[in-house]
Length: 362
Image 1 (cartoon, one colour):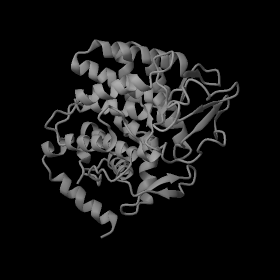
Image 2 (spheres, rainbow, N blue to C red):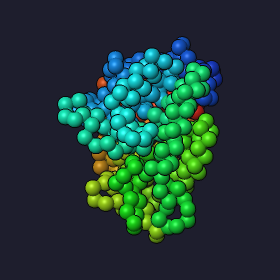
Image 3 (tube, helix red, strand yellow):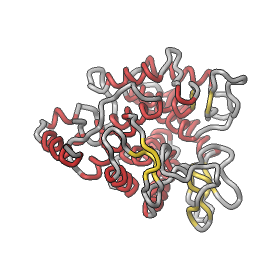
């Protein structure tokens, strides 16, 4: 049976399911109670990625830990209402990554290096998710101290990790880190660092309104990039507009850029041109259990595939959300994959359950 016939059969089967079976009962804010079916996936993710002391481990990257992983873990722990995991992740991050003179975190910790932090620069996506996790847990657990901490992080993101567009129009851009990504002529950006929902919810909770304006600008920028093809991993912006980044940055649309459609969908923006482009490209080049992950952004030539289920989950969710169909071929969560696709996998399942109940995995 080819994939089109398989999809037709699964979509028809899904359409016959009662709405209650499709929705899984997550509330709009995205929290999952103890009886939710995705709790088992959360437990599996913890067994794969989370040490008892709260360190999120990227085994593929020499068992390093990143502010990204700590932030992702913190947000997921808040959503799954796992206070023990939340407090452990936060405690480890405070003890090991909070080494700067501001509220931001050092971006990487290496277990076998001396010193274990060799670069005190931050990674803004990690700080963003760190603040979002605090906002979510602060609201749900009645902990105003967490919102106060998120406010300090948000303020330092704006103070240190924001830059005006080189065109002089006043648009505020989200820098990947406090240092190293801008010159007098251009700003280097990673489009996948924009998470509009997180930015807007942090702004609402903390009063740091610049994050809302930055989220809006990010949506507009990604829309502009999508008009020319798939959104690339990295870009540079000059006064004249987007240009390829320096040679040390990926110009492909791959392991970084796959987060762009995921973050758009999690933010409720299934109409994003970036999501549509990604859905079309993955559907056109799909091979069973071996979907494309890395593309040439302009031609959509497939440059690399992966068997990891997390990448299939993002592609399947994108296809379902864009098509407006019912039922998706999202795979069940599995620990037979590294930290990064596993985390994208769980995020995609969270997004499906909270934003696209009609795209229930078949």
